[in-house]
Length: 112
Image 1 (cartoon, rainbow, N blue to C red):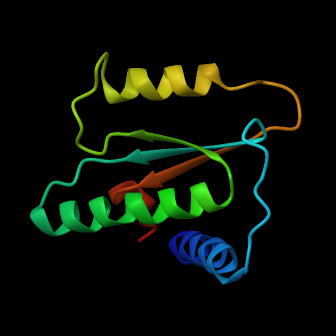
Image 2 (image 1 turned 45 degrees about the horizontal axis):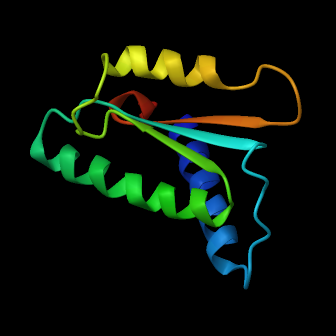
């Protein structure tokens, strides 16, 4: 049930952003989307998880939001993925009109 809701929300956001002739961008200081990519395990999952990141980034860019990607296989300059996630969350404003989305891509997003 949660997976269905998650997928429908993601597809709805994607379709609405892609379907608009010229989407009204959100001020960058208002919205940040943190994409957290989990461990793939098998090659099948690796390809699927890797394909989702640019899709999300495209929609995020169309919305005029800031994108932070953690765990997509790149060698981090400093710290572990968990440390980078903590730092990314700590860097966000705690008050004000800004929105923070945390998108989890991986095995933990399945509800079955």
